[in-house]
Length: 182
Image (tube, rainbow, N blue to C red):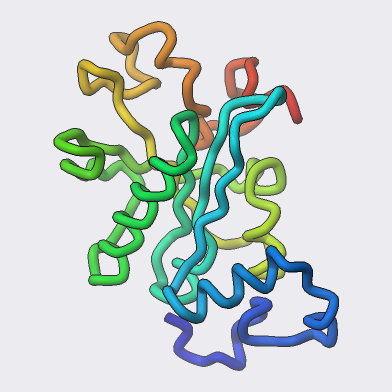
């Protein structure tokens, strides 16, 4: 939702003379944002840690925060992020502290504002697209089987480490697989 495209510095709106150097992934992102309004990057689980997924283009196309999700199957996260992206495209305002019911079957998700100090660790392709590291990102948190979120004291022990707490500054985040690359 760029009111004045001349003010946009993203790779989609402005070619800095390096678009011919774009790799296949960058070109796919550009095409998906043009066609669908956003792209979902899926990073599968590996020896470093659990998988995660995030959007690129929601802020550009719809003025909505980018969305990121962690710790479950990347294809499930892709579907959930697309469902929330469709809500944003239809005019739903997505903001910090909200809970949205029925996004994962009959269960809710919670949205938390990501501290920008995490961007370079997790959202490199989005930084490349936007050509800057100053765009809003909301973490989409999923609950345990009792509908409790990983920051809540009553959450199952294994659920507490299943997702990062990216609203915390990296220096305050509990040590674990999410901080190993810092």
